[in-house]
Length: 349
Image (tube, rainbow, N blue to C red):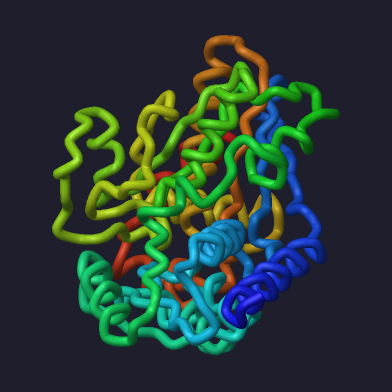
């Protein structure tokens, strides 16, 4: 076996061995007396080794790149990211002994940059979110590296039909619940890869479940869902780190989505703070986006007298955002008044 092919085989083995050592993530049922006939669940993706939903994506992207012959023993890995994907990719790059550079907007949470550096990666910061794509291409060309490009390959790197994807795990964990087949799965979109995996799996398995994608302000996904205009852009990035995009990403597949809802940024942060009181720990702001979408769906179901279950995701821990979304002064200056959603949230308790 040639040396490079042998290295690729060893790299794949290391990633598969790392996966074998990992347990599945927990499914948390929320105690909400306001919804006696509706059960809401959070799949806790913060328990992955790198602390977020993006651990699954990073593993799939590395295997995809290795099996396609794009990555060898001396390849520098470059990725565009708002933080969490870069943290996870830095972990896998270190695992197989490759250098890693994350191209991120300078507004990325400092704790995420520290984690990237902890795993041996480097951060290349841009002034604006929309600059990360060109900067990544340029770095890959200059260093003869590989641009992982999560925004293009997220939807195709994961086997949505097979075992071990997030949708399959979700449905297996629901088997013994009161309403084992969810009425809704709620998911926010960054690359769009996870919503594509879940939506395809639902259809392939012929489940009677609908998928709702929730979108933050300053993201084009909801408008694209309504218009199918791929040229849509925004002149700023989302204020909810990790989700929403200023352009239509190739991995966002609108045809697998049954409904979309835009969630105000202040409401996302308020819901993340509200959830801390329910489960006793801090979560990231995108979890607030997901959960408010689920709560609003539950309220609609309650008003119509429809029982059932709703599953959404706890994307990452709030410990990464102590200097931002969990800092009242930062929230006041960058997000605004979140107390205006207190009345709505109190009705869900």
